[in-house]
Image (cartoon, rainbow, N blue to C red; front, side, top):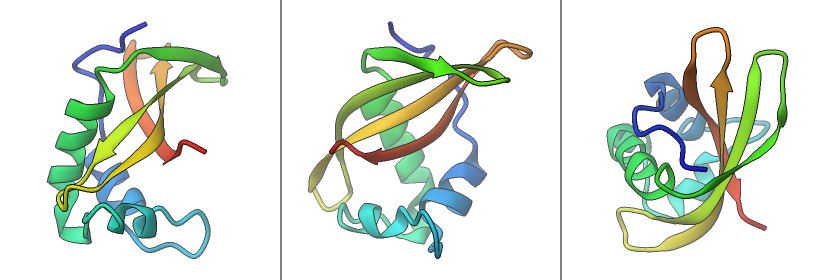
Length: 107
């Protein structure tokens, strides 16, 4: 299934989670390999929206808040390098909104 084009990608999810150095569950190092830095939050959001959101997604379970979906694809960063990643999204049943949750390497 294709996820809605207007799916929500919260700015704080990008700047405060994916690009922020964290002791546990750090993703900033992975994204740095592709050339993303803390100041590249808008670029990363645009790249997720254009490169990952249009990919086919499959349902990956339910949470108390809604259904989770996973899509896999290549993310190409500002330095031209690419990495296969898995993006996780959730359809929130209360609001009817699909939201970006996170991404991982596709290994």
